[in-house]
Amino acid sequence: MRHSKTTRKHHMFRDTVDRYDDLRREWIHGHAGIWTMQQRRAELLNRRIRRRIRDKAGARPDPHADRPTRALLAREPASIEARIELVTVGLLALLVPVGWPLGRLVYMRTEALIPARLRAYPIPAYLWAAVALGVLTNGLYAVRGETGIAGALLAPWLLAQIPAAFLTAGIYGILNGWLAIPGSTDWWPVTPAPPGVDLALPLGPDDLTGPGIFPRAEPAIAAHELTPVTRAQGHSVRLIIGALLVSVVGIFWTVGVVAVGTKAVLLQPITLTSGYR
Image (cartoon, rainbow, N blue to C red; front, side, top):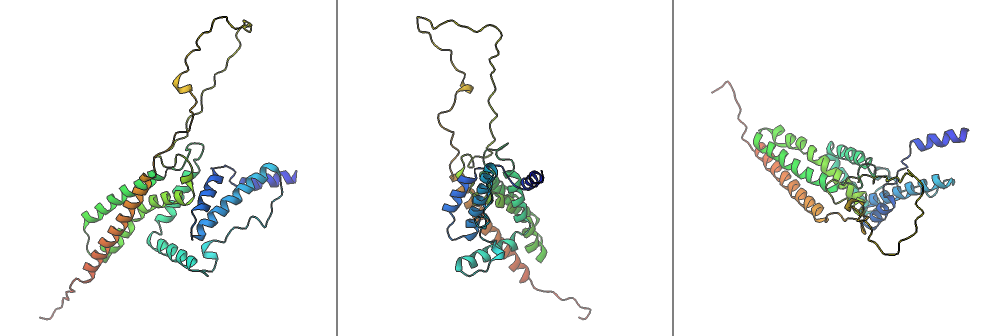
C-alpha cells in the first residue's frame, strides 16, 4: 500500500506523455554539432524515454544511466566550444532578459497542447509572428523619435523584448527537434478530430442469405471515410528559413539604428546655461 502511494506521488511530477520523444531525440543528436547544450537536450529526452519504458515494465531504474550532461552554468568551460556556448548564452541573457523567459514559457505552454490539440509544434507561426511584431515595434520606435539616451537606447531595448519572445519560442521548437515531426512546418497543425463511430446495432435477426450468383457493385465510400495511403506532408522548410533570414536582417538593422541614434545623442553639443554674460 505504501509502495503504491509512493509510486502515484512519483508519477504525479513526471511527464508521461510521449510527444514523439524518440524521433526528436534522434534529430537533436544528429544535428547537435559542437553545442553541448544540444547533446544535453538529447540526453534528457533519452532519460524521459527510459523512464516511460520502466514505468510500463515495472523495472527498477538504473541511477548510472540517468545522469545527463550538467547544465551550462554548472560545468566549467574547459574547451573552446564550451566558451563559445557560455559567451552566446551570456549575450542573449543581456539582450533579451525578458523575451527569453517569456519565449520559453510560450514554448512550454504550446508543447503541453501536443498531441491532444496540436499534432506538432507550429514553428512558422511563431517565427513570422516575431517578424511582424519586429516590424511593428521598429515602426513605433521610428515614429516616436525620442531624444536623449533613454529614447535612443532604452526604448528600443524594451520594445525588442516583445518580438524576441515569439522568436525564442520558434527557435526552441527547432532546438528541441520538432522539425523531425511532420506538421511542424505548418502554420497551426491542429490535431484532426477522431473519426465517427458507426455502430451496426442489430435491430433484427441476422441476415443469413448467401452470396448472390451475379456480381454486384459495392456502394461508393464517402470521401471523408477514405483512409489516406500516405500521411499528408507539411510545408517546406523554406518558410522557416525565410523567417529566420528576415529575423537576422531585422536584428542587425535594429542594432544599427540604435547604434546610430545613440551616437547622435552622445555627440550632441552640450549647452551650458549660466547667469553670467
